[in-house]
Image (tube, rainbow, N blue to C red):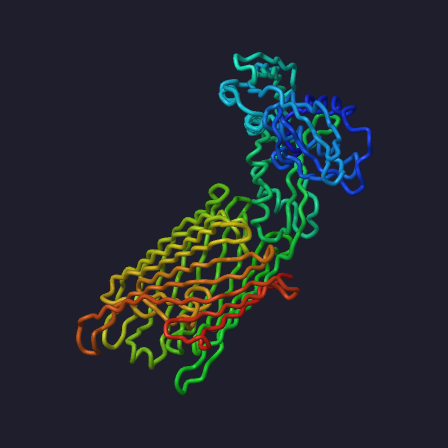
Length: 591
């Protein structure tokens, strides 16, 4: 879309005054060593900086003319539209016999601006824009107000609206040093624009309909500026476009309107690798943890996604997950995905999970989602005996809301992310030799919040808060239902999933210094809290509450390299000395 232009300007007075000064220049050529410049405004000497001039000495006539233009432009911006240069005189100084050029400025009266608007099309409602154009203001304020009127008309289907100047009436004020300029403007709203067609260029892999269905406008719709301006952000959030140019509005010789979109495709597949090292304690050796996450984000140009993930969280815990996502199910803006996940926890039990997730966009930033899931836990014989873990199955339903206004998903500099979900279901235990089959309710609530606050470029503050709670109808929340956290993505400076509880929370505070578009260095402070209940001893029925707050701090970096974005975090937990911290290394590569 072409940039909206306000067709109103006042610098004609400036141009006239500049031509009037032309013959006032000294006839001698400026000294090659440079002539000092002195400005005298209304009889008072002012510095070059106060006069709005960034040239202190002039060696050529062109530099003298530039200094004159800058001085007059500075006065014009202060509403002295009749400002002029009465004369420019070259004077030799007695001290070193050098020429000094004096510019004698006459600012003239100061102007207040007001407008009188005539409308060429009486069908356009007047009350909205008339309210915007009341009163007397300076030029900058008027340009902003006129632009607001044009923007409002563009929102209502008139992107080609413009103002023209019919005449300017100057009125004397009781104060001789000020005058009132009445601008007689004519508002041309232009035609009501309806889009006849939309063209997308630059998509070599992605199918055109995959991009067109994401747009908030369709052929036949009336032009709306807000919707058109939101198009680049909407398309970039798909994750497989590198850039989207501002939409351009064209009209052909038959009066048909075309919205032209130029896109550049980026890499849609991602490989995310994370490695961590946990030093041993006592006679125990250290060990490695890791994550390998492979994502194909735009299968055959259709926007479909396949994700495979493997993670080793601790010495004896690992997880495997597979997921498939189908966007725009049956042509409706409903995104459905399904997945399988298997967790081997400390060789004590195996947890398997199947789920189906549906996401429904609700506006530009909000997403509603619902999920159906089933889980099963199969303990080994030793865990069943020592931990009292019978086989169990859970069927649950989840509902949630997500909001995301971050300006970038990899290295955001501003915005807010918020997500909350509530899960409710039934947990069933199979019969054992000691007890019959049982069924209990289970509920979970999850809250995630992240706020990115730009401080002073290139510095950003990041505040993230996360909370989880699980409640059940059982006397004690089972170890398989408790929430685990700690490690590279939650509480740095500690082992992966070192802590667990029925109620947990953690926060991450980062001060970031941006090194490039996708690189940053930062320092961090992480806080964590967990609560759980456990039997006081093996025989008593009484429960003991365990709750604790943990802290860690450290530093890290994300560097954009030819291999991808390399990340290194070094965190120190409570009691760690400087050389005994936890190292987390990651690699995010697109291909």
